[in-house]
Amino acid sequence: MASLISLVNVGKSYFVGDEEQEVLRQVNLAVKQGEMLAILGPSGSGKTTLMNILGCLDVPTRGEYHLDGVLVANLAEGQLARIRNKKVGFVFQNFQLLPRLTAFANVELPLIYSNFGVAERQGRVMSALEAVGIAHKAGSRPNQLSGGQQQRVAIARAMVTEPAVILADEPTGALDQATGQQVMELFKEFNALGRTIIMITHDPSVAQHARRVVRILDGKVFEEGDDLYAQGNSRHVAR
Image (cartoon, rainbow, N blue to C red; front, side, top):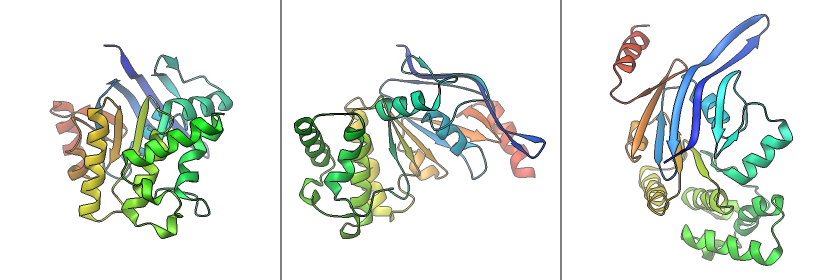
């Protein structure tokens, strides 16, 4: 099966004054359709930068990134925006719901940006809210919802356009343990239906829900069990 996501020798650098800082170093990663993958790493490891590249919020300095057959690296901002809206659904730690909009309207937004008709928008939104078990809260605003309910709305918003991949950034970070467990079970249910899900987290207890875990350390990605990871982790701990 061809990879839905392919990163080949991807690097990312930023300039601070005249000094170049390398954040990602020769990242090679392939993700197949239907995988549930966790990218696990501590603060400062480069996982946020990697997420931004995977989500087409940024582009690599070096290397190639293909998303669902599209070479992302050299796309202009307008093209990146279209790819993001069509191919990627985002779930964030702090939910990022618009406070003045109802749950229904928050989930509807990506469909408006994608120029779906009114009737199809209404059907898709209610289906998505039903899928996350919160259709009865369609008319509620975020401040009328619990944290777990807000995250369910965010998940519905991420999946409503039927994207190629759902990117979840610390998806349980703002939730208590029991509610976080419910959210993880929801992700596993969607994955069982064929959804591709990538979770970015620092928490091993979150990563263990994934079918596959890769670790990121000092800007390099390692598969679990990779001897190079063990060596790199030893160097990291020794600092």
